[in-house]
Length: 519
Ligand code: XMP
Image 1 (cartoon, rainbow, N blue to C red):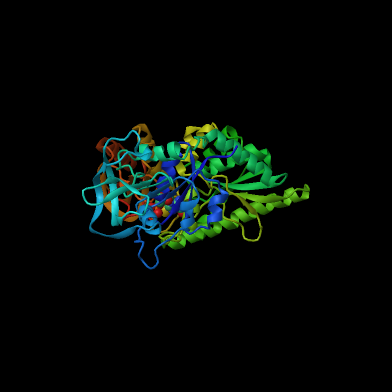
Image 2 (cartoon, rainbow, N blue to C red):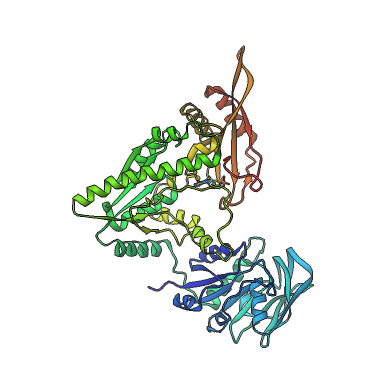
């Protein structure tokens, strides 16, 4: 079965991914391609329609991004958004100019002419705008279908099946944005709502089975949702020809090594090789206090350990006359888009480390079963695969683990201290029913000691930070206003139960300017 696809050409807007996610909420598949992609590549996907995204430039900028104008002649429905509207106006013979005043933020838009894009919408829309240029003259054949008090807000050429709006229907601030997108995707493009979890699972299992043939695959597990869903999908395709490697890097949460193994084997039926390499990691971390050096030490050691284990499995399979040729990775769609974006990969703030670093000399081929999915879709798939909530709803946990939450040197004693405090934070957040509401909630150990008093005794012990944030995708975050009662319980339990911590503080920094993790 051919999946209905909507192609989104990206002109560099910060909202482009959001357009794709919104469309997928209608169970319609959508792909984001850089606007400069050759037209043949667009045609090869047999899309039902094309969306031209917004972007930060003006069509008159020397280096403004341009798509092949032939996309407007494919006979497919086209929706331009913001810069997309200006691109259409400019290339089809209209005139774009700098607006006297920039429109930014909330605006009221009046729908001045009926067109199927606006079917069922009220005459006045409450929208989100963000632009400096506007269409001063429309191209031949186009009509003005919406306006603000300042400028054109929507144009249409129904014969050519091209529509464009100056505002952003994809952002939540545009109240009727979803209806407008639905009118385009379902109504005008006639896309089928066939991008369902069952369809995805079936298609992925078939593809992986065909790809791998009679070969073997290995997969690094972290215990997190991405690598677990990737492993379960691949195991569904090739059974026990998938071997998962789960490494204890010495900076996991309390009892995590045992718990994850149990869940993966008993509940998910995965074939897991568990490697306790904590001593190796902790030896590499001795004396290291610089955050980037810690990340590098853990990343490099992970590859070394993974490499050793993979080679052992490799040798065993070879002697049985079989060959491992595949490595499963839990790459998600935002990483795929980012690496091919017109803006190029963004600046490295922290060197991220994920499970499954490719051992350099093993020449494994990659299977990336999640590379078309956003994080919320991975959870949906996991749920459909029958995976337990305990894994699906897990808050993200960084690859370098507690090491980036222990400021200063990572020693076995300090890891044990943080594990105890972390367990209390998570338990109390869960008890208060907040675990799924916040993006992450955890403890951080500072290299700061302070004086306290317990009973009649003076104490001089470590400080621990509690951090809880709300976020959609980890890119930006707000500190969570946890109820005082919850903070009180966390604080009093940590100070009374964790020997070595006598003071608890709460982090009230958002991202930006802070980051979620402390290192
Ligand atoms: P920051 O601290 O950069 O974190 O605001 C953003 C999100 O990414 C997680 N994080 C990581 N995830 N490997 C990962 O897989 C890493 O090296 C890593 N570092 C940070 C962090 O927990 C947050 O959700």
